[in-house]
Length: 455
Image (cartoon, rainbow, N blue to C red; front, side, top):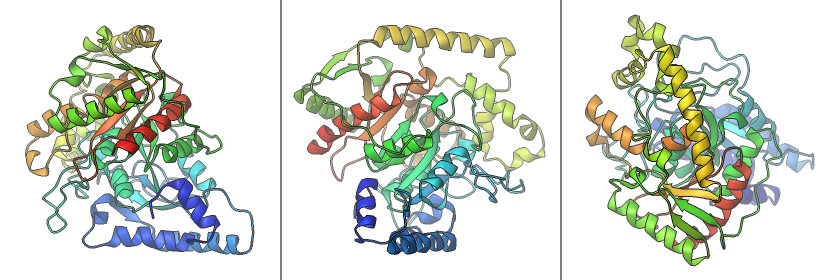
């Protein structure tokens, strides 16, 4: 069974599968000794998930009203609070912290809609890397070129929401949520061949989510399809959980922001992107290559001296300047230390510069429905290339080069798979105007139909 939420709802409501069977299928995938569950999950709620599934099945059997999404297994990234659980954010530093007193707002909303949380997914420590490596809990791997017999051979799943992406690609959950500060839902989605979405930051409540950068963090969904992400996004934002009708691709106006975002593309990425653009053009989309000067001036868009670096360092400063620093992954400690010498003046000026770029880009792109670009210029890196802090730093910058742009602009962005079956995973991103998140889902649903027909 394909884990598309609409299909699962139909199967549950027509007795083609029970919630307990669905939960057992997901748990079996997590527990498979030859699978990736031991690295994709930090903890799994076997007994609790089974009990909740049995309650849902009993209610359906009795004909009682249940929420629309009742019985669907959901995985959550290890930085979302759950009442009674310690939020460790993929680290051992917080293991002695007090359990959360209540669920994060977005988690509470999904639980109220009927989702069953099946476990907490692994992630980059404190969410500060797009590679998805984790020195404490193991590194989840992309489904592409994964050796089931040797966990050291394979490619990273992307980060920071690495385990979340793998939980979907490996059918360990039907739905998942992550967070995105510089590409943390979209990079892993692209590297694992699924759909991932970054919302406009202010749409999502941040209460109960361990922060990296309060100015950039945004909780976002990942799933098998655009509709899956649209439903989750709606619920997380406090709405009804519906998807959006597909927007016609004919006469859709798309801009390709040519320039540094297309430098050094992997050949396979370039070929898949070109094929996707050709398919959309054939379907009637109006596509224009367009250099955008304010974007070009930002090279590279993921500057180490940034608002994110300043805010992340401020959050961790006390621990980094104490003996607790020894508990950090050295690579993450190195990244966090990059924000220590950013002055207050520089920090304030960075916000002013950001707002000007927002306005300039909006003016230049206002006649387009969305920008379109490769989600990452690279294929998921192999584990053996990440053998030093210097190598991780350089490869991470490349992997997040394109995704970090939409975080800086605070524009909603969705990545869709555009590679052929059996080939290396490649994502194509659509970036919409700020606060036009739901319209972007409609556009992406139309684009998805065209891309799926050619894959």
